[in-house]
Length: 266
Image 1 (cartoon, rainbow, N blue to C red):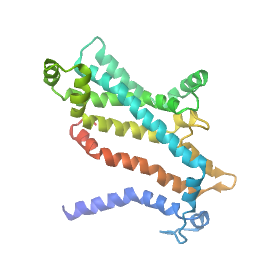
Image 2: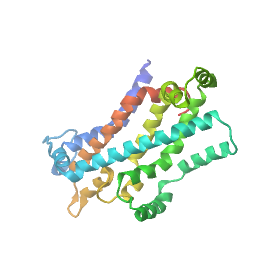
Image 3: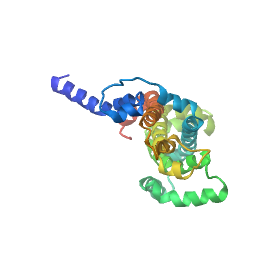
Image 4: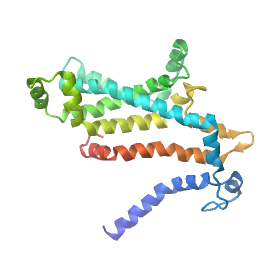
């Protein structure tokens, strides 16, 4: 690696990691120290901000709520997208290309477009302020992307494998689960990554479709703004803890995401 490349990588890494370091730095400071002036590290190291989050039910329940509907959304997305992608990959039917394009147009629309219909519908059927409500709303955006990603991975698998399995006496269910899915494991990993990331960071739908029981952590973080000002330390600690699930997901699917980029489908 040349000297210029090394300097470029170090500079870029410092640029990307500086906000994360500053967030961690603030999370171990008191509000007085944060607002009192600039310091590169905590002068009076404290865990009080994290203690607030781990001892206040309204805070840690926000994390449980977020993880609950995010995992639920990822599971529903896979269950729906896998057979749909297989149909687009293996069969030709009237309007298949138009239907495939229509699925992607749902992903192109901003969440605010569907906010009022979802709110009125869920309020009418009693799904408001539930985890399944947020998960289903997010599926409107995650399923089209999942179908598009999985269809590319499935199309890369030769059709002869399907035909050989049927000749050998495999039922469709046995073939699909035991033989076909392992061949597209990278595509499944990429799909889980994008579904999880979208649902984890999306705030507008999650905040509007919940009030108390399913309130996500991102919405609860706005509570730190009150008449007395902003509780910067607690807000920073909550931000640090919010990053951790995303980092873990990226760690476990990193190889699949890399292969997805290498195949040119992501």
